[in-house]
Amino acid sequence: MNVLDEGIGPLFMDPDPDKAREFFRQKSRAMVDKRMSAKEAVERFIHDGDYFATGGFGANRIPTAICHEVLRQGRKHLGYLGHTTTHDFELMCAGKCFDRLDAAYIVGLEARGLSPNARRYMQSGEVQVADWSNYAVAARLRAAGEGVSYGLTRSMLGTDTFKHSAAKVVECPFTGKKYAAVPAIWPDVAAIHVHYADMYGDSVIRGISIADYELARAAKHLIITTERIVDDSVIRDDPTATAIPFYLVDAVVEVPYGSYPGNMPYLYFSDEEHLAEWLRVEKDEAEFAKFLDRYIYGVSSFEEYIELCGGQERMEQLRKIENLVRE
Image (cartoon, rainbow, N blue to C red; front, side, top):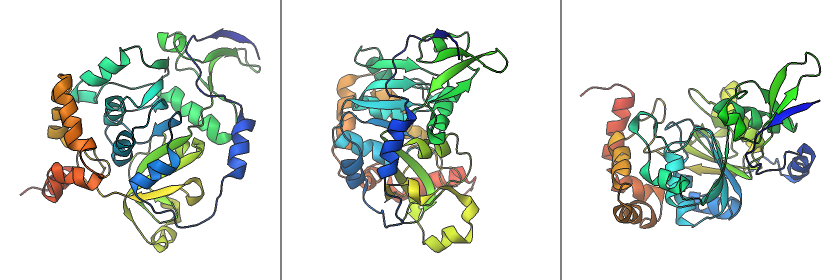
């Protein structure tokens, strides 16, 4: 296969599938109780220097509780996958947790605006960056899940995104047409928030899953946070609803409202007031430091954070907004 062009961006992970296979060959697939706290999950599976990825899409199904714990435990020098990231990216920048970034969607919180602190961090020179399209990242994860070293796309050809990526333009051996070859990526650990799961890790996602199916199969370690843990009989009653099977999962963490202040489809709406507060306080670094001390470093758990943000009363308001319940 002829390589016709290549991007100038850094490649943060070896795409050799046989090296990844050596890891997965040793990984346990036992159907055992994997329940633990967010604190324990981060202590066991996320270490300085690891490559980390978060699931969800935009402000939907963010694994916020794990991100908070990464900050509280002071993780540094992570690689990070900025696939469709909003508040999760904002959090990782707040802790300066990563210094390598594969970027598709970052800094922006969609219609809410741009994160001033995330912009400061990305302009600081402290982060190495490779650019990708959203689809290219999904293709990289899919290639990893399939056990091959690269995926093929057309979506970045002829763009500056390609120029600043680590992709290569290759010639199809069948047709002679050009494609962008994007390298497979196996995150050391990923965190995905789901609607419900059993204690073994069988997980159900209601609504759109984006690339979480691919991420779950590419990640070497997988932390599932869930709105609730159900008996495995619930999973067995409708096995086709299982998006992520137990044998991919290393930890199951029950965290009600675990996507807050993001949205959880069909359960609760995003807290637009709190997200706006984040964007406001980030403009002043001293004020932002006090904000982080109050909401993240000054609490011992995600449950305490929820209480600071209005507790059950606020969550009920967001539930009504999501489900269009009127007083």
